[in-house]
Length: 566
Image (cartoon, rainbow, N blue to C red):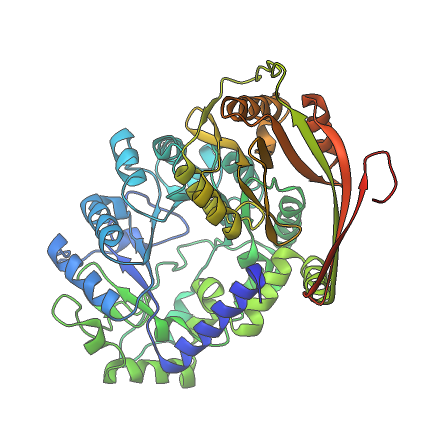
């Protein structure tokens, strides 16, 4: 099944297979428990230990062992993981040079200066999560350290700036909503959008009552969760939970397409679950497929049972430790005894949804009607599909219009940079493999528009051959012809004459290469692009409707502009 739905189903299938076979797929590495924050919603910063944290050589050995065990995703965590910045940079760089594996980092931003931002941007990390629970002084109060918001916002700004035109690391603003922030957390969305983050994720706070923890001991070992209740509850009251739900829906309705908004970890919780601190965990995937390693090398079946070690990865391989007797006994305890602590585990909302819960989360976040409609349209297209477009041409022999942009932008013409950026956007209409293949073979032009260090637009121009998505095949171009695939400008930067400017620059480039006839086709519904084409002097010359029946019968009906069918 194509597209995002197919990827989602494939991921669920692989996840269930890993659960049933107790196969490790992901790793959570606590580089340190030490922290530069003193959060009111987390007690990890209170942990104390006399043990010595692992050194660089030991971590490299462990990562090698994780790769051998088939791990495909690693998350670097703390405490404040940047207290071990040397290890973060070493592991990210090592992964980049040796194996196919994604590595993410979670930080609070307190230790990010200009140098650290440049190092992180160039490190090879795939994604950086920066915690921002509120805007301004409220964030500082939640984090327990004055100046925390300034540090977090500075970290975001500097890393995004240092990333320049690169597409990695992806930058996510991670917001944990609690009773301290429910009245104003929505400001984090505007903040994330304004600073240029790729994604903003909203999660609900977790809390473990002490009596629940006491009832969940295994072999005399009491768990030590780092979301332990400290004085007054951090959970939202019922009315606050209702308000939270309303605000989340409003954010989703009005979200700008330039930023990915993740709300599923709140969508799937009911008002009662949020106000009571109980979560709908049915079974635990983490103890079966997530390798948790503490700062001293101990492999844990659960991050909260931090005194129950399955073995030490600094002296044993993951293959030797995983599914050993201690591990299987813990799994049996979780499956059959169902300790009370699991009913309060907010981490499980993200990592432990069953197949049906995962589907429900996706439907709630994306909208049931939206997804059902997409599915029906995809099924219908198997049997019958049609589309229509206006075809335009431009005579570049006369002078090309001199159009000035309203912002100080620059244009670069590096094809591979453009391809990497388009792939990173994860939009199927931007990155089309058949287009890319032909572009590389025939030297197509993929200019990028840059505003400072940020890519805000692009164009695609074909020569010799052009792949027309509507037809599902390439079409030949004459020696003096070029084909405009697409011109796109980030919605935040529209209204500054950038699209006409980019088009005029591309026409001039084609004219220099002796290609005086520029063709393009625009879907009939796209009135804005048709207006831009007219402004530039493109002339309609045909209207073509394409038909496909049962994927094997294909034909076009064409009529000339202002004429009947021909």
